[in-house]
Length: 357
Ligand SMILES: *[C@@H]1O[C@H](CO)[C@@H](O)[C@H](O)[C@H]1NC(C)=O
Ligand SMILES: *[C@@H]1O[C@H](CO)[C@@H](O)[C@H](O)[C@H]1NC(C)=O
Ligand SMILES: *[C@@H]1O[C@H](CO)[C@@H](O)[C@H](O)[C@H]1NC(C)=O
Ligand SMILES: *[C@@H]1O[C@H](CO)[C@@H](O)[C@H](O)[C@H]1NC(C)=O
Image: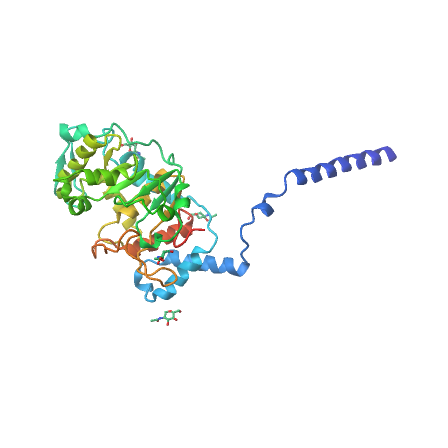
């Protein structure tokens, strides 16, 4: 009897010491990881605010920008948790950025015809000349291999944001319309892929008809980032895009030009239009955001802000590098922004508005 009691005590002591040492060696993670504390009321408020934003399907609710900005500000200070949902699997099967973003020899045959994305009655024959410009395959393989991505929009909200260092922590940085990278502390220096807008090359570089060096220099500011252009949205862009391709091939061969596939753009447009009202065309920022959702493990967005005032009602320029307004009526930026906020709320991506710490 006494022996059994002693043995029991021994077992008890071993278990007790075991538990204590486990506790000392491995303190409970929950206590360690507790983020800035939010009260129950705050969490409820965040959740309500989030639901409200996710439910917003149109602009009609934004009749008072002051109120809307207050909501955005509050939402941005709410805790954010990642949640890569079913929706993204859907995006991959419906749009297939990994295989279809660029025209390649893997997704296009010599002799086939490409239908223009915005001019559906026009087609372009994939002749020997065009085929010779195509890479064998996309520069990346399967989904998510690009790791942590930052998509940097050109909004004036980036001015004085001090977001540069944070942007540069991403593995892969996507930029738009050959935006300048000379405001390093605000926009960062890294560039892995940058879009080129054909109309921008017509307006700022005279369509590469005379001097080509200024364009090459502008591209070179992005290091060896892939240049992405859409030659098959409008017929008028095709020859210009080819000129860009040959210019880079001749003067800066290490920086390749890739052609965005018109079918990819079409699929993407159908995909996002299902979710509610959008402008007549998706903006290139929205398009690249969608590419990133497929190819990256984590997506952060900076410089997406379609309003002319910041969250504290201070005036904001159109771009961080100039104040030239975009053409009216083409893109529905505020609608797109609403969608981005909803994706932020759902944990699909993380939107950054205003200053970075
Ligand atoms: C907009 O909302 C703010 C904050 O609630 C309020 O002070 C302001 O009067 C409103 N403005 C208009 C035009 O309704
Ligand atoms: C993640 O998203 C899915 C689909 O929207 C949702 O059903 C689920 O509750 C979310 N999970 C968390 C932890 O929020
Ligand atoms: C994506 O496109 C590539 C290249 O055309 C193809 O091999 C792959 O099967 C496609 N994947 C899906 C999910 O459609
Ligand atoms: C940015 O900071 C500079 C210098 O600190 C200041 O002169 C300028 O007004 C600021 N711009 C904005 C948009 O806040």
